[in-house]
Image (cartoon, rainbow, N blue to C red; front, side, top):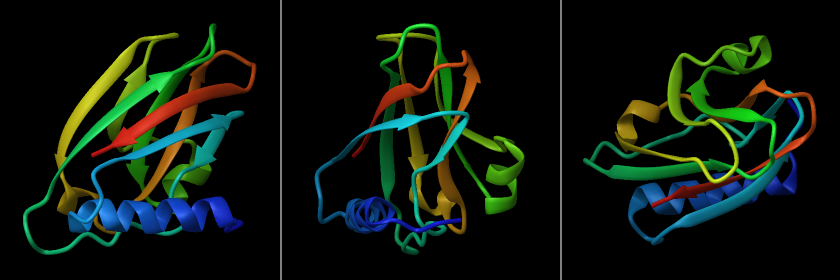
Length: 125
């Protein structure tokens, strides 16, 4: 796994959101077959924190899944915890999850349908 400035920025923003110090994170990214969103596994606080996660595909002819799992799951293209699925352009999914459910998991996007690079929007509140 290569850690980029984008990954570090996203990890810091996610930590602030989970801690309740940020109102929302909006990520517009692109993926070929898969894309790692978090640079490292999530470290959620012990306190109860609820996250609202909105996920949308912005590229016609592609379906994407927003997932949480181990780095091994990411490398294998598996999605043990589905946080969002988009069945096409403008189709938006919403998940409400307890932040502690993401503890120790990496966040990533997998392309399920299509062959072109796909763009997506992810909002975490």
